[in-house]
Image (cartoon, rainbow, N blue to C red; front, side, top):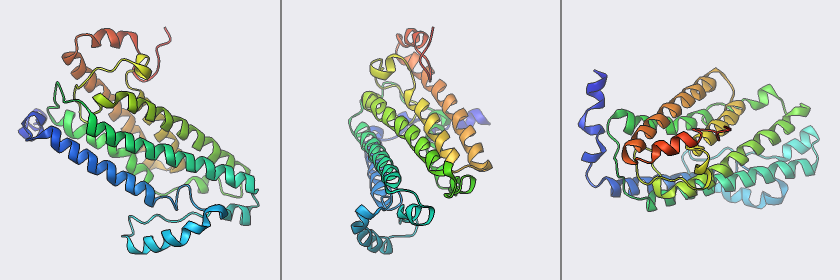
Length: 278
């Protein structure tokens, strides 16, 4: 039954009409949607401090015109200073880190958009459920994690001395990971794909040492988000995500090995998710 499902014509991308054009249009629209969403999320992340309070009336007015799921719940970081006696310097540092993180993540979505619009045609297209639908499902799984309840404040209340230090640490790790992802994505650009396809073999930059640096970053970043949204459901989602990404990477490697004879040598000299130490 599974083989019959996997072999259905609907899962054969080679049979999809104008698949490259449709892929660029769909990817472009998705990229624009995510970028637009990022701008609408500004009141929540990085949030408001006294220095940018002038923007709040404009965003408040905009949020009243948007559906509830699009409007971001505003976060006023000045509350930390008023109610929990954090210093202005501590709040400015947190806001600055969150603002920089917003910029890097938004830059990542711009890079995804450019990759979709400029990537090379597939030399070996995706075929079967595991090469078409499965990668898409796994790729969007982290969005479910961050759509759950933010529980960090329950584990470490704002009155706790560790609360702000923990936010600093987690934000720095996420920022580091997102920056690496942006670099890896720009280097992968010509070969970018979500489904399991072979386009161009990239062996330069970060890919000289790691075959799947973007997936490795996803493991790190989404582990941090799981800590911020920590409960049994998000832990289960994260474990499914890691297992799914590993399966996805192995499927891609079989695809690349078949399309590029030199891939096997490349595989033997590089690490899958981490650099080889010997």
